[in-house]
Length: 619
Image 1 (cartoon, rainbow, N blue to C red):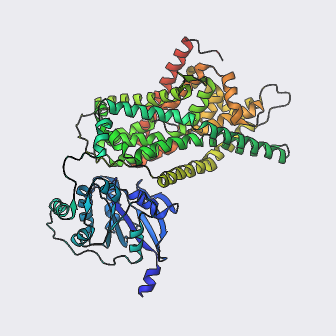
Image 2: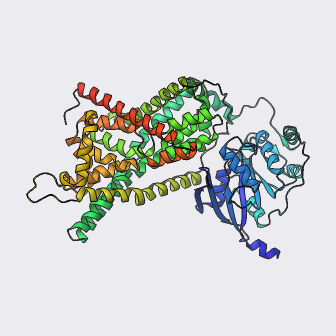
């Protein structure tokens, strides 16, 4: 019977405080054998992976959301508590709880381990980041700690190859029973102090850690802000400078593939559908994949290095002036990649008012889906030259657009604060140890983002591109027609019908057409423009032709107006859908869409008029 049990996959769950290295350990153990979904009924992320122990036993490993306590104060912690206790609906109870502790911060993390131990379920404690603890001069008596806790304790360095060998060996024969019950009136803080005294020795006072020396600069109100500003500036410069060679290669590949298919297929509707609809539509968006991945790389590096919580602490005073706390910084920064996970990250904000305001602000952050539109318009209308021989002018304009979004968000937060009751919420954050980002974790994160982006290309974007191709191609021009074919199509008629509404902000009917599929995903607007102009102009290589085509046919005022529109407009159904799920109703969806569309129209109107006044109306 025991042999049969050991051949079955073991259901195990990783639990721990935020910043304990739990996700790095999960990546170390499972590699690419992961799947990400949501728990039933909530937007809390569910990550599950598979691994095989050295003895060949399969393990299904669940990476639970980080929690500071099983006395839940947020949806994340509530899910972790219920799954650990075997009370979550539709989720079988884990057969083994793997409690991950940061060896550099046992005072905080041991308390959580004691809470998990009180559940009485089979568990293992993993002392992670042992290398960092040793560099700080700490010595941990692991056998003594194991004896005191009454559960197996192993060590790990999750960011190193083979850094979880002891845990893997233990999973071959995991504990089958829970720890002995502790006293119900156990004082967890007193127990932690006793364990630290008996099991941990620290270096003598006066030895200044590297983290302390770095924090003097990083957390300074002056140098800290300069460092943060410089990091953001270089990040947006890199989006253009580093990505361009890769973008050129992808563009050339898509162009060559389109021409190959064109020569293989006979002239007709099928050829136009494949080349102008599918290949051109997907290609005009795929070409921006390098920029999106570079943006994500920066965010992942800042997160993995331990810098993001420090940036949140640094910006707390500035954000407090707008009615927020520094805790809103990380969700808002995440929204630069995508507003959906950014909104979901607001679950860590305990105050309901602060959480709601952060949700309303998240769509204002310039998500990666806007990058294709920004890149297209900047390349078409901004000279490709360097300022002072160092800074790329394209990157400077992109940086300005991002700063405009951030400034607008602070103004909106200030207005919302004026409309509600002001409250003070002190910011309490754990500052993790600085660490070098693990290349494996960075690679997995970028791979997952690339898969998500390409799956959108293969589903939403191609589908909408084909639909727009059909609207742009049918009905055919009548006999003797002299104008462009698209003027007689359904897309042309829709664009001309919308024109009276958008003409006051400088949009032409082609832009009106592109705005419609862009409601599903912002980046589709680029492939929509490619489809419209490729059909109208007879060009098949939309990605290569769009930039000179737009610069020739649009005025600078029109381009600037469209850029202003995309700074604010909520053209993403996924964002509105997650707002509804997080707020539990349609009210905030309507409020968000209304105020963002209002801001977009007003900003575009002012930009259009100002640009005209300064002579930007000539095409």
